Length: 501
Image (cartoon, rainbow, N blue to C red; front, side, top):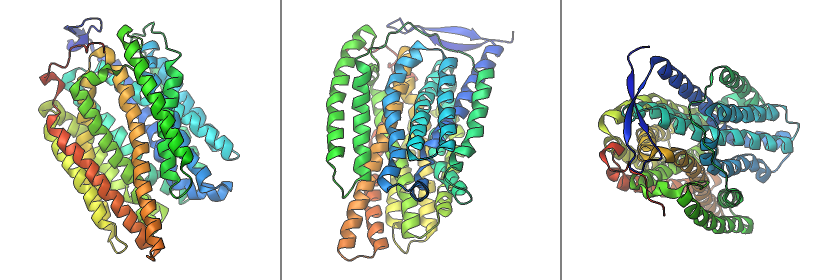
């Protein structure tokens, strides 16, 4: 056995969270790193798939003979499934072993990908997306919780930097990958291209994945599950329909959102009662930690910016500037590469200097980039202005995501890691749906109004997109306000276990 290195181990039963130094052998460190990197590769694979279908909508409408609203269900159903499954992962990560959850997640994703590749029509393709989303929903919380449990605080930032690659690069290059595939093949190859990778990750997992957690005997609250499904599913569905149905009858969207809010209140009330006995499906004591709460709000703002750009930029470049699908996808590639290249060094910097020196310039860059995109949203705009703005935004997100992940979850006691991961992942989906609904609604409403006033179609759409980016810039200012107040967990007394509400 080699020289042991210390690892921080926290006794979740202790209110004072006494920290003990426990030696970790070289073999155990090697095993832990293998598990973490397998989870990172798997998470990248499944999250890349989340945005890969967006630019394929026109192809699907033509090949399958379906309407635009039907085709949008392939994205809506994916988000909806994620919103329903993710809140349960706080319980799943405590109840079941790492290996079993990994194989379940990758098994579902691989099965859904195979089904999508073979789908004879729209209905089967929709089922395939739901199955894929079920696996995706488990993988990311599993990754974050495992990293928090295995990595000591002093090296957590560099590992979270790898997760930053997953959360920022995978969604950003999804449209690029989709554009490349669709330029030479049909939509079916979006699944065919991913299938070998998914199979390889699954097979390697069968051979190499090990259980690194200690499953508990927690019991699931059967009332909380349907409350959660209707609450988060209703909110995400309502927001998604608002973004997709501008100018149409919005009764269903408003009704779904309203029902979701009512059930959300019931879900929160029940969790507040159950967490007194440590039986909550999603423990909300995470929000008793101020740093976690502020970091989560800033994370939501950043996610809205990311998904706003992912939605609006392809529309602007294709429908206003007249670019092809491939060209539009390639416009997002440099920004994605920047995020990937910066995430690891940002993680190392976080370990050395903490979050504030990274978050403050990151938040300023995001807001500046949104403003730059707004000013560049003109019919005569040179393409490089949009490219530079997107690269600035990607730099800001790279400076933001890793510190937020590390700070938010690191501020929690160990027994709340799984619930914190589930909360962050759930809010990611809500932020994506909310950002999409807001920006697309604004864009569409102003485009319709501009066309009615006699503006050319491209100019009217540019006006709508410009206004949507201006709103995004205003939202990004929230991040600038919060950034100075977020500090490294070790500098606070936030390690104590929050009292029951």
